Image 1 (cartoon, one colour):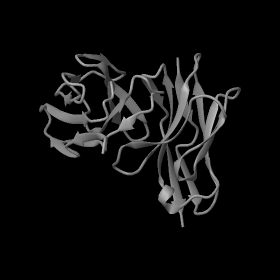
Image 2 (image 1 turned 180 degrees about the vertical axis):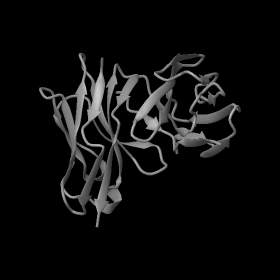
Image 3 (image 1 turned 45 degrees about the vertical axis):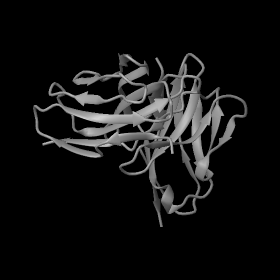
Image 4 (image 1 turned 90 degrees about the vertical axis):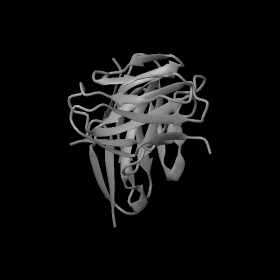
Amino acid sequence: AQSVTQLDSQVPVFEEAPVELRCNYSSSVSVYLFWYVQYPNQGLQLLLKYLSGSTLVKGINGFEAEFNKSQTSFHLRKPSVHISDTAEYFCAVTLGGFKTIFGAGTRLFVKA
Amino acid sequence: DGGITQSPKYLFRKEGQNVTLSCEQNLNHDAMYWYRQDPGQGLRLIYYSQIVNDFQKGDIAEGYSVSREKKESFPLTVTSAQKNPTAFYLCASTTKQGSGELFFGEGSRLTVL
């Protein structure tokens, strides 16, 4: 069975510091990988996605993620966070284009 | 602008009442989804539809019902059989030819009093 594990439920970090949000997945078939961001009381929006090709993908707002097939990981990184990055981040995998499995989410809290 | 519109954004219901959440999209997407979000549990799939007049149960369909009479619309009814309906509900859509990237509405927060 496929699953997505986000290893940290909450990540506090100071403004301008780097951050890494960790995501591991389990799947016996090829998947597409996504990171979504959710601001309070809003829907989710796409940060970035990995479909194929280069394992380092860049997204919006200065975020990037690296696909590591051997470790089945897709960690999200940003070299310098802003207060406005405070939000919940979801890692997700999509199987065959129609079914998406989400991780439980990581709440990023950026402190001044 | 194309997008997904959910209404109402906030809804209060008394126990024993059914309530219907609206979801409309003008993205010409084939597939539509309903998710339920509870703190610390991520998103759980309630129902999804890949084509008009057809839909499938997701992981937590009990106490919910849907219809897909038009490509643009996928309403969700939370029935009185749903034991713990207080939650944040998210509607999403995607195109059949794509990678599965989901486009989300702004969500509807249902509170049962």
